[in-house]
Length: 224
Image (cartoon, rainbow, N blue to C red):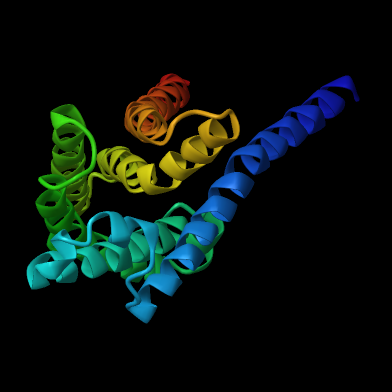
């Protein structure tokens, strides 16, 4: 009887912890996708565009921007489907289709346009270098995710896709930190730079922590 209660409590804690993580992730992801939609009115009175009006005079930069934000929204939406255990159990076809969409968008749209735009990013040389790293690492992790699943190495595939997803989610976590520091009264440029660094490094460390945690769980179950 006592063991049953303990197991029930452990399951309840696990469900609560998963909800505590996924509810804000899904909520902020959908909010980001929703906030992307107004840009496709192609008006020029948005702050990001008005601050870089001279860049938007270039047709190539203009095209890269709209491709990049559309790619980001698609990737975040597809990634939410990819990491849903319910969808994976119910329909592997949906998982495969959304996975192929995610990989294609990252490799051919999101990462290349992100790399190009990083040369013109706001901030110092180090912020531009960080954006370049993000684009390259996003591309590399996604490419490894693709190559490992082609080799039927599911564990390695999950690891690399977690790392890829961590880069995609910097678009979400950056805005969360930016809003938090804005409420604390931080200056715009300082807020921008620190939110960016914390988002990128924090997401990468969090991904590696999940990989380490799941690796330990896998090794324990394998040993048994």
